[in-house]
Image (cartoon, rainbow, N blue to C red; front, top):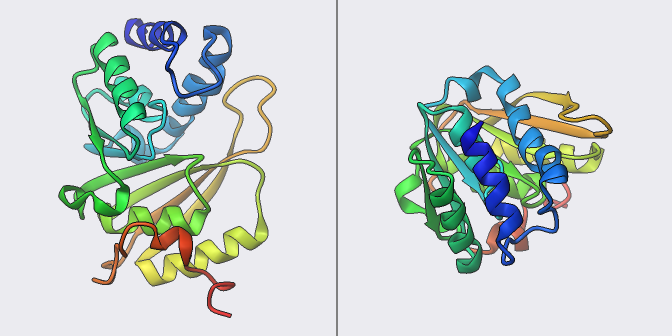
Length: 217
């Protein structure tokens, strides 16, 4: 817990933290407990490589690096200010198995087909997250996408996108990471086929022209 305490302390003390939840009494639930919910999944507990896409303030990536010390964890974030904050937090907490890559997910060439687990929390529409993740997953790798209240249209789009990307949805797991948590879900996808060579598309295209049944109309 010492490293997680250091994460909470660094979050509270850094005025440039890119999150509205900095108070340790709240962050222990909103950031730490919510991140640790992924440990319900065997694939996460056994992961050798984890990539956190759109890492933001460092969650869930830094927390999972502490919880799964045998994993190499990469926090991928495109904004330099956020990258600098994550690096400060990582250094303060002495999380040696984590590193920060300051780039867009679509432009992370060194990560292609190299990750056993990819995590994403409050990043983008689900079909967009799938497109970011699929080229970066190794065969048999797993994406864990944090979501709130379920959305039928978004899930339908995601299933359509998954089929195009070589992914298959394994489950949607309802979680209650802390008292009072509502509508928390982990959407879990597995890479079951090679992602077509046209992915990743150039930066920005996944959001501009997302895959899915509505996009195909």
